[in-house]
Image (spheres, rainbow over the protein chains, first blue to last red):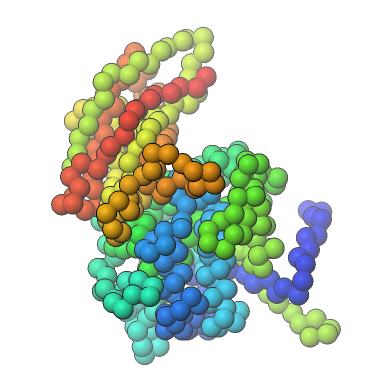
Length: 262
Length: 137
């Protein structure tokens, strides 16, 4: 196939690639855990609990069942990933591929890893700037009366959408089912982002949008949405349309070679 | 488990222009409590797993953690306000295959079985203003 027009990203940004959690190498998974653990140790607005609070308790800035669902969550993952980068440079949020897997990835279900508590296992709900932490109940995968995973055929149907709005509605319906399928704190908007699995689920949703964008170049949210500022940082819908401008992309594989000036 | 059955909804048939697609549209659906799942059936008031016409999940907001009035949806919007997070939503469910499986039906009832993930807190989670069956030629 002939090469496409090359894309450029301004500035000295290093593009990083998000990967399937099932394909993370041992060092990559170790870095992910290290980043979550470090972020969970921070009580201020650089920490995990602050970012978990964006989505539900206490800030509730998230967008659901609106046309801002995909842009808002893309911006949210972007800022959270930057917070993880501050702890472990180069770490990437992985996706949970619930189109091929009928289970929660083992990386998120084991209680201990490398001899200590696994920070990807949901343990507590600690509301930002509060002085209390509540233990959380276990996830209950498959207990709710939604269809069992995987959701490949529904993903395929979403990918056949021909407008942004139609795609957004279809993928959000699947998204809702996955939240409910997981159970525990993942099944409520107010608490979902306190479960580290939330981010792997939403990276999968964001990846879906990225793939759909590839297949439908130029298919944008309606014009009136493009300059809407997303809470809380004011980044606009237009500014989150291109993941490369945000410094990341989705990779099946990514191989690197040092350049002559490395 | 909440069970709700609609009044009969007309299914206009036009042999010259058969429908290609059919949707159920739930309007002004409330989502202020625990998450819940709704399974839908056409002309099956008793439900039957093998005859499910479609389903949807509502990713609910859970309990109100604010003070009195925190979760009241404003009745008027000021300039530049984003919609309140608990503003009722519309949900569309594709029932094309289920309606096509009833080729003789001139009307259908819709039965919804709604199950909350916290049934002890919310026995009847399904609350909405209007249901519409829409077919597209």
